[in-house]
Image (tube, rainbow, N blue to C red):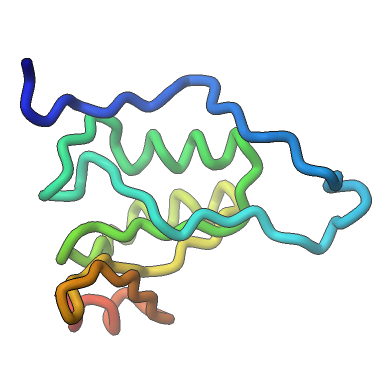
Length: 116
């Protein structure tokens, strides 16, 4: 048995139906601020950052953050790629603080790099 099997990106991610529609609440944002990809050095994931941006775009997300373990993801090409798809990418990182995993976000990639 494989110790840490690779996670697979589903081609058709299904999201639970909510009790409200985008038509009724057009100003709400669809957000996911805790995601990992194959660029995360501690996770064994087989889909790329670009693949995940594509999936988030297909599923109409407005804001995302990659929060890798102890590593600030700052690839400008991916940030620009997300922006061109209409997605705001917030720089983030997942760190151990007082023996607990904490998600940290910043306004710029230069600021988040300092936390690595």
